[in-house]
Amino acid sequence: MQGRSGSLAGAPTTAEQASNGLVENRPLLLTRDFGLVWSGQLISQIGDGVSKLALLWFVYAVTGSFSLTDSFSCAGSFSLADSFS
Image (cartoon, rainbow, N blue to C red):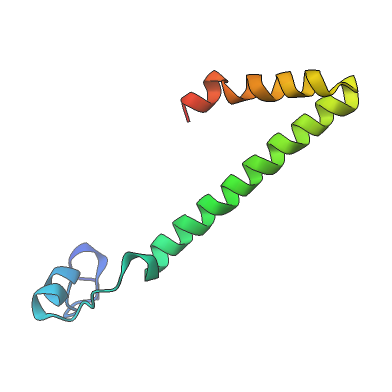
């Protein structure tokens, strides 16, 4: 039978567990949710770096010029899209 807020009837809530001392104090780095967010962000950052590298490689392959590739790289560092994310 469902009780308040979707918990099982008679099961203590998180607030009740905290007041009874049943909730353990784990460091933030060891919590599952934080680990998932952190690893997701890490994968996202790696993907962004690979994408930028592939784009610069493409610019070099098309133009054959290191100076144009470097100019494109510098221009990408100051793009407006990065400032809004």
